[in-house]
Image (cartoon, one colour):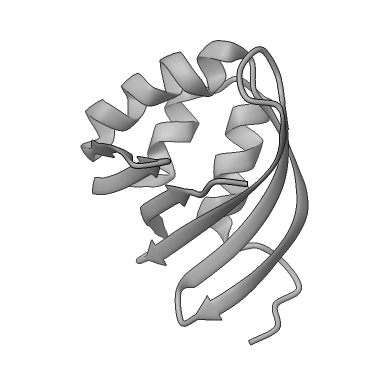
Length: 110
């Protein structure tokens, strides 16, 4: 299914990271969301906030959208260009969105 714009919670994930707004970043996720960063899993908002402080906003990450498509209903493959004081480069991510929130985020190897 072709889409013209990202679902709101994924856009919020990008915008809040770029604005260094940890509260809005966490608000994009469901309470029981899972973030899988190359096999390291963070379950729930408290764990995701911890990841954010060490691996995302905490290292001044900035995202630029490269491409995205809807793989199947509510599953989005998103390619972002990442810069900052942590990982730098282009990387694929898979988001599962449900009820206006990110239910699962998989950060995939390049």
